[in-house]
Image 1: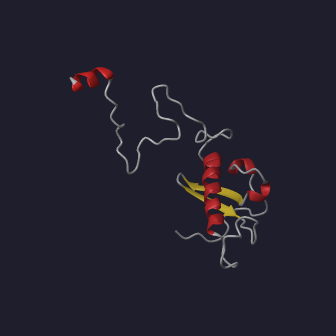
Image 2: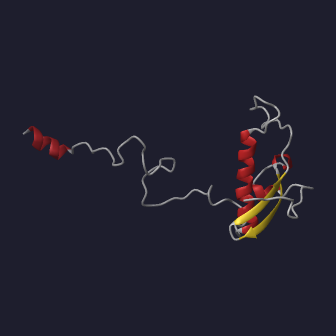
Image 3: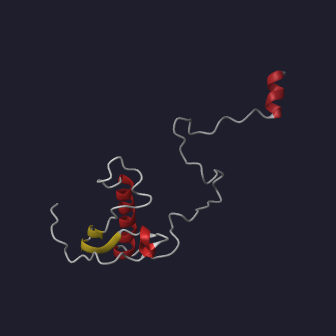
Length: 135
C-alpha cells in the first residue's frame, strides 16, 4: 500500500485524551484520523524526539523506542474504535469484570491451563468408599 502526502490529516494538535484512554495530554501522540473505506483508516501521529519514559529504553538515541511505537498502535486501535466504529466513550467493556453464577473458577484463572491437565484433579474418596475399600 502506497501512502504519500498528508491526505488532509492535521498535525497541529493532539486528539482528545479521552479518545485514546490517556490521563494526560503529554501522553497522547495521535493528532488526526480519516476513514478511507470500511476497513482502511489513516492516522496522523506526532512522535516526541525525547520522552521521559519512551526514550530510556534506547541503545541508540536517534531511533524511536519500540515501546513508543506499540503505544501509538494501542492509541490507534482505541481511537478508530471510538471515532469510526461507534464504540461509545465510558468504562471499557474489556475492563469490566464478567461474572457467571455457574462458574466456580476464580476470575483470574483461565479456562485452559497450559502445561497442565484441563480436567480437575480427581476427588479424594468419600468415607463410604474408603470403608468399602478397606473391608
